[in-house]
Image (cartoon, rainbow, N blue to C red; front, side, top):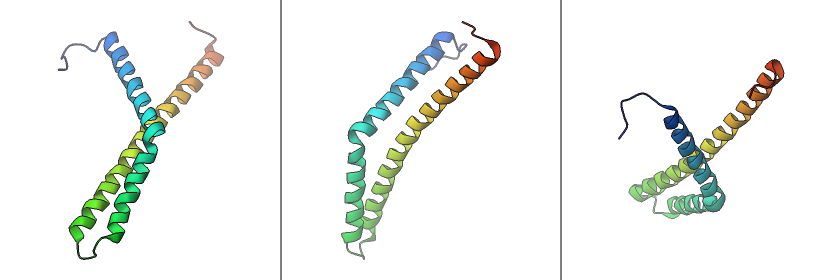
Length: 105
């Protein structure tokens, strides 16, 4: 249950750690099981192509399952890519600040 109190420093640290964990899990899932998404989509699309043309229900279900799996994989990849892009941007900003204002630790 979320508290209604002020957003404290340890809350941001916890959120940052949870975000890093999510990114790491997404990266591992794509690395270890990315092929599974592809095989699943291929099997469902094969079902669409080989099913009876009059059986629209089976075709729709298979197509929707393939679409959802494709979107899920793309969403995980986008999450990882966005995190990496944000990390590169933060690094560039820090380097720019350092070059403009000198090192401030």
